[in-house]
Length: 181
Image (cartoon, rainbow, N blue to C red):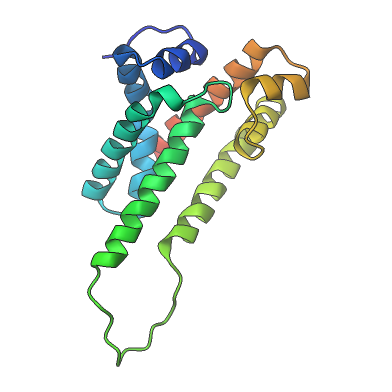
């Protein structure tokens, strides 16, 4: 079930105001992306389902703290996803049986840096597929953590154009991740 909110700006505003209809629309729009990121990092469907649920519960509890002017809603949710994945990986390592002291460890690398590298490579690859203008907008949003308004000012674009580029680019990224999955 989706609600008809015209653009990400209105959806973000409604979500931050605590609208349950907006929560449903946010879940419908971004849960496939959140689940895919969790599944890729954790490699466990049940754990990915748990993380997806945790992300949206945390997002809903913090919805009034979300500021649409600071970050796109999708990027904010990806940040919560990364934190939930890190928590799940930490919990997994705490529950792992103690290592056998007679076995020499081959590597002390934790899974989290691999996830960061994989996530960055995936996002970078998808950004490279975008046309020049949307790519510049998305890089400023993802890498420089600029708000829609700051991006519009920096690039001399109308705010609505920046929001449209971000909305379409996030939709493309979500679709591409679902296809890769």
